[in-house]
Amino acid sequence: MSNFTDAARLATAALRDLFDPTPLQRNDHLSARYGAEIWLKREDLAPVRSYKIRGAVNAMRKVRVADPAQKQFVCASAGNHAQGVAYACRHFGVRGTIFMPVTTPQQKIDKTRVFGGDSVDIVLTGDYFDQTLTAAQKFCAEKSAHFLSPFDDPDVIEGQASVAVEMLEQLGKAPDLVILPVGGGGLASGVTGFMRDECPGTAFRFVEPLGGASLTAALEHGGPTTIAKVNSFVDGAAVARLGSCTYEMLKWVDPAQVLLAPEDRICVTMLEMLNVEGIVLEPAGALSVDVLPSLAEQIAGKTVVCVTSGGNFDFERLPEVKERAQRYAGLKKYFILRMPQRPGALREFLMMLGPDDDIARFEYLKKSARNFGSVLIGIETKNADNFKDLFANMQTAGFSYRDITADEALAEFLI
Image 1: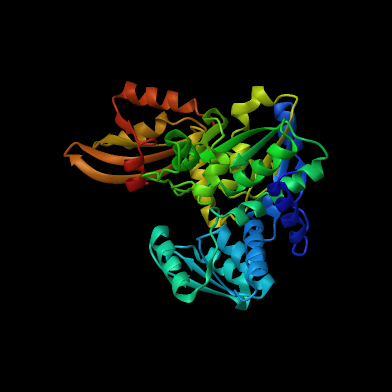
Image 2 (image 1 turned 30 degrees about the vertical axis):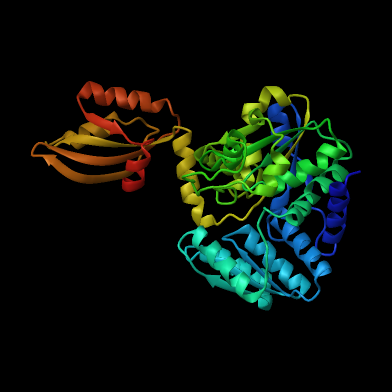
């Protein structure tokens, strides 16, 4: 047994003072679909609805043992790490100062305050996370406080390894495959660091959001590399740069083991898990389940564990998730129609719609010529193939249009 596995077991035991192991549940729906034993390690059911509490508690515990006089802790986070640190501060009776971007949704601020109570102060500063982080680190140095990294810290990684300790105890055997989401790499480092020692026959797949592939970039360049542009939709895993500590623990990974999940496809998975299973997952929490279709042939007949890493989902985002899911599935499209300015033209267009086609958006943008006007139209349908008929009818009738559904610049500006 290595020093790391010893430390992971100690971290797991210490967590029992705060909460019971999160459930490992066999999912009948997914198991039947893929002809496999699909288990979900439900980190979305942890006290702060995320595995982040594990690393925060373990790191704070070890600092307190090494330096009992240290009673001030600082972190920078807009989400799950902030809530984990707040919970840990209240548990250990220490002061926490949590820096969050000014743009952080009020729901996340309120939840952080609930978990921390009187033990934490929340400072809202910076429009972007980098600005928030700089302010947090400056404050930390001035106050001689201890900075708690969300992932790039050996003690945090040890804490996240408790997910694997529980998983093996609950399953009672080594799984054939474990699927892990990756942001900064703390969870993936901890779980693989423990399991590669304890069950070397287990295989791994790592899932990153397409717009935040920090592990992919690090493996490609031989070290942590900053991504120029990050899509922030999968906020729990949209990290611009993999950690240095986590890279050292993950540099053995074959790039072929890393899968990328398109943000809109993740929305389809989130809705399915909500509507079919009643499981609320945040975008990062759905990553491990999202890639199952692409692994279908490889996992048939095998025991697979998907780590659902978090369930901090603000239901005010549900319309956006539904919109993205429909667009990915081809059930909703937006296009700009050059509408003839003559009596009966609109009626003619409406007659082209099928019985399952609904107008979700209709807006005149401008009159581009005396005889034509540009119209933004959004159409929802029940079958993606219906758009073939609609567009064919429009072409036959001489209606000029441009499909902007996949045009990010226009869609962001107009929709």
